Length: 633
Image 1: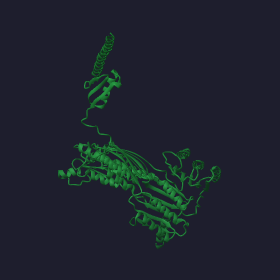
Image 2: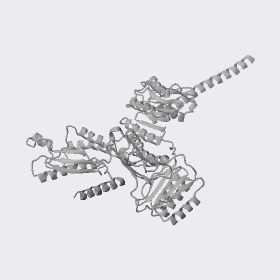
Image 3: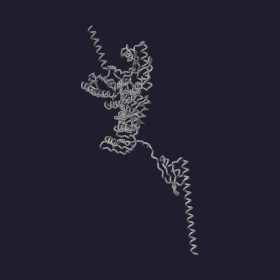
Image 4: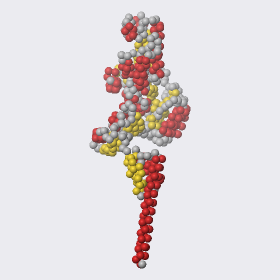
């Protein structure tokens, strides 16, 4: 009985366990089926039909090959919305793309006194060893080259090697720089030694840039050291003007220009910013001096560091001048000192003042005339001029006058040195001042000449500057000279000719093509005096031919103007049949005579004006000759 009870109890427990196992099995099957079905339905709704689902207990396996990584992640997220994300097991693959996208290749080059660092991603085809070797050659033995480049085995983008060569070539001119390189873009940030060097490098880098490459330049230059720190402001019959202007800050420059405007200065005026100012009160002193000059109405004020020369004119009222100078001296900041100069009116009995004149023609010819102190001084001036301008270009006809001031020779040599800073012009030396006039391609010529005269002759010397900056003469811009432009026009036209429709002044298509090429050149030439001459054959009436030739020349001028060529200094001339270059009795000759010619109009030579001494001597010679003729009669 007891055994039977134990067996019954054991059987009951066994039956219950078996029933539990069966129930758990079916429960798991239901969970697996529900999870699989739910995940598949959700994947189908998202369009992810490539994904398959399998289950093992509570685990849900995603199987299949996704087209890309983003789609694989989308499938995982979709399954995670149906079941707990922890139950999802990722067994998916990602399809390998047929054509991998090439990465963006670029590099950064940094150069300073310590060496060169280069970082970025370059194509595997780039010769890194040669690149690093070129950097090592730039920095020398004392510099270091840090190669932080990575390479990718993809084809180099179009233009990569050309752009990289340009960037590394530019690095040789820029010892302190940062250069960013992409296949179609180069960005350069650099420090240059001077403003002139900055302009020269900007021109050179822009000219060398490969076609199709965008160039971004950010070049800067330290402010120059101005010595002496000079400024000269003058008021005369031509109005107020700066012969030179220097300022230490932008605020000081604005104050100085505003003070000049208040006494009548008009138009755009430049003032050089630089280092070397003698006092932080520079703008205060200049403002006051200009205002006081405005009170007397005419004269000049010159600053050389802290020394001021305040000059009136022969017409200035002496009492007014004394009052203004006294107020100037009382109001100036410390350090500044004034030397007041009021020229005396010449005695009517005196002959004309001594003069020395030197002229420089556009062709480089130099003539030296007037008075000079001694034979040694004349030989010195002649040798100095030949050294500056070339032996064959100098003609000396100066006369000796031993009554000249002791510093006359110094003035003459300073004047010749100033003349060498011009492209063409003239200098006139008198006992009172040095006058300089002419053209130059140096933007800061007036300031440089003012500083040179002050340093050579002292603060008390008067000078008058009338110098014109001519852009096409500026060597830093790399513009062709007028003569080079004329030669290149002939080269561009070559065997072709600017043709017109028969009997009219309308350009045909070939003529328009030639004008396109000429316009590209003439834009670089700038404002040059150019004649456009029209020529015809001898057929028809002469008056009609002349009118037709002029109309055709005008059409060429209009065509160039439409192409944005600066034609302000151009002229048109109709020569008609007057200047044939071939016989008019053949068709070939008539065709040759129908033409357009471009001719550079050379400037007229500077007219030689007789000095006062020469005029007196000529008059005396004429009187002596007349007297001698009367005596002979």
